[in-house]
Length: 239
View 1: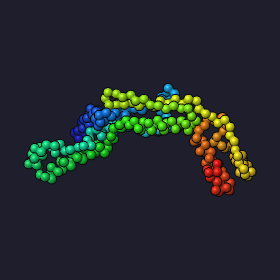
View 2: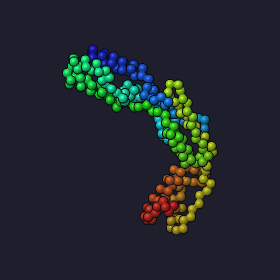
View 3: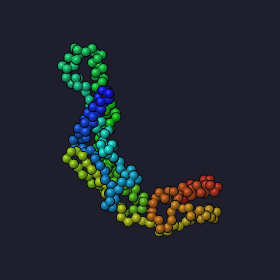
């Protein structure tokens, strides 16, 4: 029972240490910890996974709103030095009391604990303007592929005093473009008849919003269709 309560006390103390840690402890001066991304599409926040996936940087993962892995990392120190190694007098006293092997074991213990925190934690995600711009470009290309040829994608940074930053990705899609008409130029009467017989299964149709993904699906469909019909060397270079 005593061991049980001792474990609870140790756990509580551990949580207190984590909470008291400064999240930006390992954030260099002049840099900012990425606290949050906001994707705003036509003045409305979006959390669609498909859109969020284009962001190159994500904030440190949280458990119940708490960046547990970040604080684990912050307890450790990438530039760690065993405490008594900093003070030759203390090291000399230790060696006078303990054997050399015991001192080495103590040193390994300090180093091992520090390494454990660094290994199991995650370093702070430092906001990077290059990655932000790449995210903007990826978002623009995504909306372009969905037929929003006039889309505009920008970003805005909200820097805070405590070395934290929130990045807003602002997307104005404008009006999408639609397929006005579909024309075919199949010289072979046999291939033309095969195509027309399966036309209802097409992924593109007049009036549909332009979506490059549907064009790719249609290309794959036609390749499989003609190859399964005996045109074994039919490829996308023919379409």
